[in-house]
Amino acid sequence: MLLRSFDAMAIDPSADRPVYKQLADLIRTDIEDGKLRPGQRLPAENDYVAEHGISRDSVRRAMAVLRGEGLIVTELRGSRVRDAGEAVIVEIAPSAQVAARMPTEPERKQLGVAEGVPILVITEPNGETRLLPADRTIIKVNNEA
Image (cartoon, rainbow, N blue to C red; front, side, top):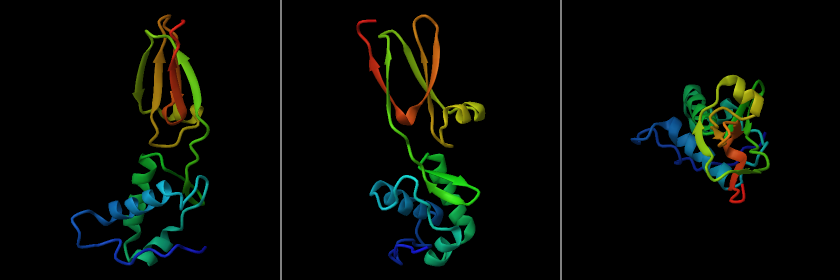
């Protein structure tokens, strides 16, 4: 796998910010800038270790931070940039209540959301409750309801 060349000074072990957070910052920036695209595999842990001269534990902690933010998904064969999927527009009544929370493991699997992605709990005036992934739901208030 061809790695993009990082600035050797990008991670500073003597800085106040822990190296794993510095690595997470670099990878997050690459995702936000489109250098790492949805579905694209990230370099292997050993590649980051060799490129930056940091420990495997630091790489793993950086990946945990990014998973917690919902930016990457880690599978048996490595990590990849999470594909957020296409947004869905959901209409709700003006008096509906919307709350956000982290999903349980069964809810996460049912809704297909990555670790670290919250869900929306929509309670309609009639008591009906819907659970929706917060990262790909657009809420529109239906004033005619």
